[in-house]
Length: 202
Image 1 (cartoon, helix red, strand yellow):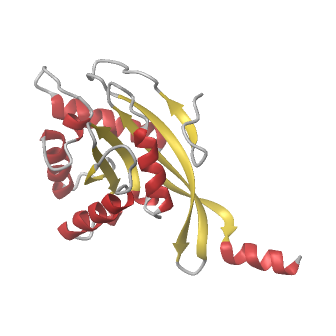
Image 2: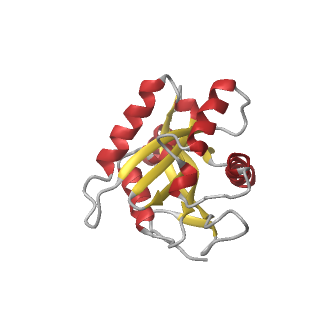
């Protein structure tokens, strides 16, 4: 299986379009991240996220993921798509405080990719949580699929002609999450404080 980066492990890889959703295909990558947990200090997590490829399988999106990782932003990210220098990022909806949060994430992620040697990328951020039936979330994700600021269907070439573009695209995203449980998972016993204490004791 192809390894796209020394920072990430490839869990699953579709090298070309699969199925009947236009040019849609995806890969799932894994990183390790340190996150703060109440009462435990910084703890090691594994973080799984998906890359949604467009037709040309442009691997510049891996550079974008690496820049998010270096900037300490990757743990928010569940899915990344790039199409014609527009980057769509879907983040965990537990980060959703109010509408200003989108602008905050977009600003930080835009700054993270500002030094691209080849192109200028525009970052659009949306929220993703297929496990909720919250009406506000449904309105949000539907606006993304229909053509909002983070237009996931347009950016990945999912131009569907059967009149069910939203439901099929949403089902596709939900299926990726159901299969891979995207996001961060705690690794029990891996705490910076405990590791430091163990090193000192040795």
